[in-house]
Image 1 (cartoon, rainbow, N blue to C red):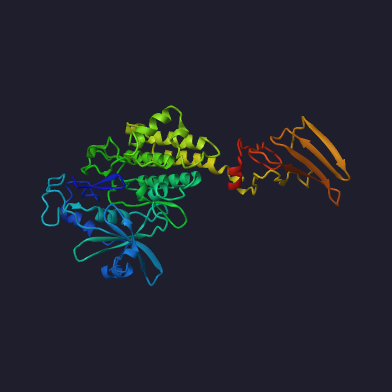
Image 2: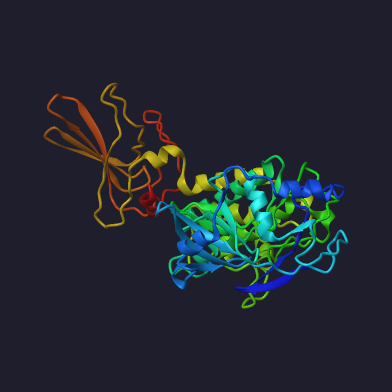
Amino acid sequence: MGYLSCYDAKSAIATYQCDPLCWDVNTSPKARNSKRNKKLPGIRKFEYLDLVAATNGFSADSFLGKGSQGSVYRATLDDGKLVVAVKTTKLKKPPATCLLNHRPKRTGCTKCTSPAENEVEILSGFPSSRRIVNLIGFSTDSNLNKLIVVEYMPNGSLHVLLHSAPNPPGWALRVRFALQVAEAVRTLHSSNPPVIHRDIKSSNVLIDADWNARLGDFGLALRGHDANFGGKVTLPAGTLGYLDPCYLTPGDLSEKIDVFSFGILLLEIISGRNAIDVKYSPPSVVEWAVPLIKQGKFEAIADPRMGTPSDPRVIEGLAVLGAMCVRWKAEKRPTMVEVVECLKQVRKRIYGWPIWRSVKRRVGRREKAESLIKMGSRRNGKVLSVGVAEHDTSEAGNDQEVRSKSIGCEGEMKMQRNQSGNTQLGLLVRRKEEVGLRRSRSVGVLHNPRLSPRLGRAL
């Protein structure tokens, strides 16, 4: 069934793909080979010696890491104008017979293709996207090993950020990454023909220079011609821990296997735990997290290295969505379109409504911190409605102060007349851990039920 390799306590099962471009077993070899040898629009074919020079002979200084197919190196091309990542691969001996009972000779069956060839075929026929690691070109060495040239992602993989980085990403960044990966998978499933990735995992999510998540490694991806993937001839493949347990036969292939893998990734993002980690019992993140989610213990699965977000519903929304994605019955799992919409709602709880992002307001923690916010309108003289159930006033010259305890914190309403005789109203806010702001028609501020100092600093 191919080969089994273990890396970072995760096992990747890679198989030789049978006819990824056309699943019709009656397609003639001549027609199939013509598809393979056709010119790839927009994809460059590099000379092998140019890649050797660009990577300093594939030196240790250019080494970035190991992928599922081989080593990855940083390369500089076009006189330093283009920085790319070069993925080296090696031909692997296919099984004696493939699923179609083809008996390969020498290098393999002419109706089957390696993961490296499959990645080139998939990405070359897919439009460039800001949510995936796009293909730039390819090359072939003297031993017919394929080299894949893709966009360089300087900030490494999501797996390293979650499990090895000294400063793991915060909740805002985790929600951002989850949404961007979901958008990538939605794009694949919505394409014509649709594409199933089959290997969604944290090590295949790479972070670009702008800290955006990109989905990469399409070696196991498949492309279909319609929404019905049943009855296809491709063997099941994926990574243990992320692989849908219901994906046992070629007839089980559907977009919902990607939804399951994304659900595992989402639980990994929430908890900071590997999909499979033998240090814990149970080792599977699904078997550990889902029972806690069903009991409503959402914070119990949150990464202990992180504090709780300002709105606890952030963890709840992520956890419930993750549990929905890993449902046993594939038909009960949401589509990636629905997943994206759910994550957008969670993102609103992280960043607040758009008007809040434009408000340059900070809630200080210092004991005597004070901030003055203009709350009136010079044109029409309208003033915010402020309850004054308990207040006292004092006047000094042209200034008048009103102390009130009905606005959620100790404060002073200060009215002052300027030289032109107009009245200005301000609020002096003293230290308070949480400040509740209510809706105001005069300035159109939306009600936020909980604005903590931590969220205030983010604004």
